[in-house]
Image (tube, rainbow, N blue to C red; front, side, top):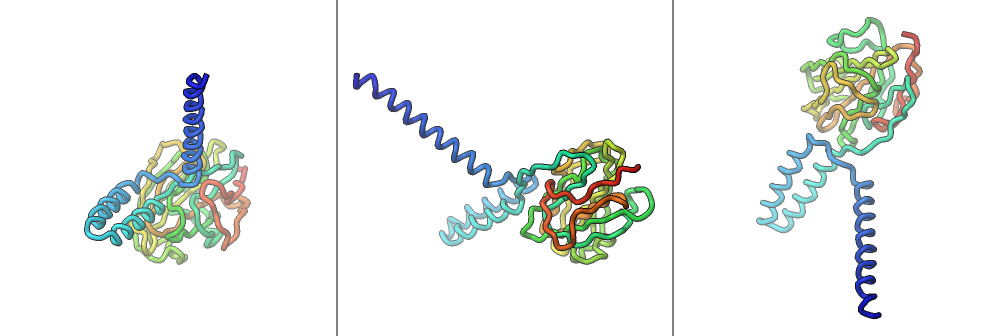
Amino acid sequence: MTESREPHRESHSESHLDGRLAHLVALTRSVVPPMHPAGRPFVFGAAAVTLVLRRLSRRLGVLGTVLTGAVAWFFREPRRVTPSRSNLAVAAADGTVAQVVLAAPPAELGAREGDWLRVSVFLSIFDVHVQRAPVSGEVVRAEYRPGRFLSADLDKASEENERNSLLLATPEGQEVAVVQIAGLVARRIVCQVAAGDKVGAGDTYGLIRFGSRVDVYVPAGSRVLVEPGQRTIGGETVLAELRTEV
């Protein structure tokens, strides 16, 4: 009897341990966000430098490990739950609403003339730096324009700084523009979509490295639901209810 029970006990103990490990892995994944692919070369490079520093000094190795973790954290791409209701424009980035004004979208997009409502979100170096599509639909145009690297919190940054602009058309026929703008420290804009691509609201489509600004243009007459100074969560915070007339 004793011999027949021991395997059962070991199996039960192993199953219990496997269950705890699986729970720990799931909990870790829920807390530690995945990393944007554009960050992998930087993290691998930092890790390689850390290995070299570790051979020279234990303290330098610890410093390198901390810096490697900081680089990985900068390129984080947390999962988000996007509202599924139609006729909504969600935040394209994490950050702080800098201004809500009437303005024309970038000329290179060839969008309809007249003023649109522009919601500008400023990203600090500590914010998540991936950008997400504000609406579902098709990329009508994608245009990159070189420019200056003024501080992204300045009004003229929208017109003068380096930028990458998208014009999106929703299934309901509305047009929305979203613009990635380089800042004083940001010197690299990554855009992963092109004209003709389909995107879903909240989908990650790009990245700006090291502090920046993202402008979302919605049709005039839309109901803006955020205020300057408010924090936004990319892919989740609703910026505006879009005008239904087209």
